[in-house]
Length: 377
Ligand SMILES: Cc1ncc(COP(=O)(O)O)c(C=O)c1O
Picture 1 (cartoon, rainbow, N blue to C red):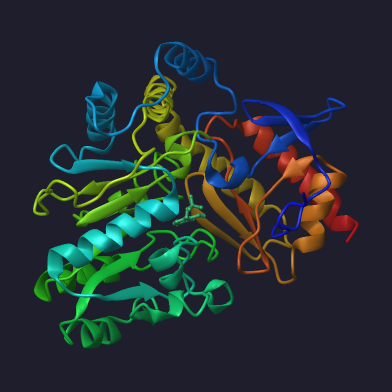
Picture 2 (picture 1 turned 180 degrees about the vertical axis):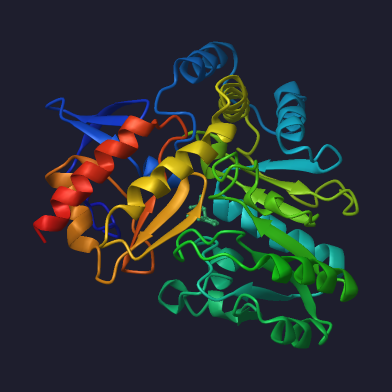
């Protein structure tokens, strides 16, 4: 049987990984500044993570949501402690897109409305409503295009109020730092006005933290740079360090009822244990705090390279903008210098999304390699 061929693949076949490195079968070492798309938060195969998952596997790996699973409450308490969102409620699922689906559905249940306002260049996933609020027609099938969605530019208060005042929007969904879109951020003023307008027009505000969440940007969630209270926060990726898990945090104003949301696999024992291990390590190794000094170090290195026209992002969710397309440069970094980086829908941008355990000397090696690679393209 053939694989359904939807991914253009690099010619690298990792067989093991440790911390910020990935190794192929010949034991060639690759520096992972991509983190498998912002997924690896505490480093590949962190010993505490491996130990927790292994010992959970020996006890019980899975049972459905029909039974008591105290690990879910432990995880809710730990996320509450890290995010300070103690009075929010946790619903667990399996991926980023599933978190978005549940967030949008909840907003629609809560407001009894159905149009969604999203932003230009947004990426929220590949499933039904998630892909409909993603600003990329190429990945929206006719089925998805049935959803009622309006895309607006960031920072256009007049356009936002005009749309919200129509009274039919259940949600405004935003990324505090756009991931796939290329690391653009709304202005601080716009974020506060957006929150106020959502309140005024009884529309839910959804912060999509699937990529930026769990400490990557220096605050636990990227939107927490601002003092706002979204109705729903979505999370996944770094939450499980590679173990599939997603979730939403729900504002206390939104009430649960039996059967409102549900999933077979979400919140299973192994997934909870993986995420608990991530939170243990984040705290013990102070990884969230360290992202800020690493960002400064990264910016200082980038400023020395004249070909870099702009440095974008925060913490360890960073981007380097060039005045040419970076596809060839990223290939050279992988094949000649053994460094993984990320791309984005902005073809001139390299994305840097390393495990949060990355150190200054890794960043230095990257810039040395980048300078060499730039001389050969
Ligand atoms: C901001 C954001 N939201 C949602 C998603 C979808 O997550 P998943 O691929 O786990 O479905 C992504 C994935 O890249 C993302 O970056």
